[in-house]
Image (cartoon, rainbow, N blue to C red; front, side, top):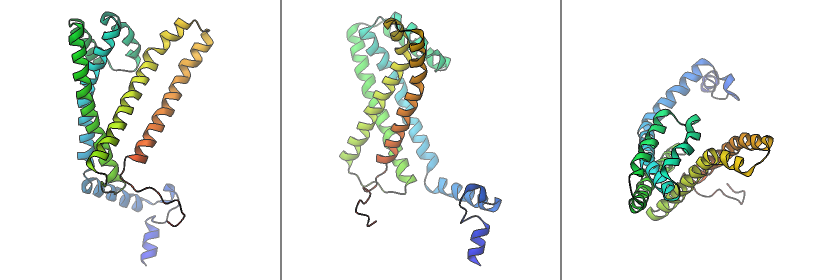
Length: 227
């Protein structure tokens, strides 16, 4: 009787299309229960909070560092390449930072870049730890790594993520004028500009897979075939 009831609700379905309406109702009920039980909304809010907290000091640090090597008055023209990818509000924030930085001296720029990087690194690392916590919930794992090991791992992921973002910005902003400066044929320039997007997509997919692999506190899989 129990087997028949389970089958009628799609418990043994081989594909989602084989699950009846009553089975989907059970799925939605379990999803709702797990969201409440595992604090999914609170964890998602924590990740979002720390990521947003890291954005503004990161922008300030980026502008300050860039201004150490370039004229701040020319950075705005370079960043216009991002107008197709960032909302107007985001560009307005960067423009405001540019004007503020333009009024500062070299020593102030160096100090601003250091402070901005430290604050951004702390916030981003806290966000990365929140992501690891969320993955532990997803995989129903308990955090077994010690304080220093966990922070070393999350800091490594944070630095790698910040470097990846910097490279991605470089690909979007620096690559087009660099191709023009090299004097390559138009066909080659077009091919490179088109292929950069699937290349970035592959990098993002690899980064996400690495986070899912090493984020949860899981034991190494058995390689002797016993488990």
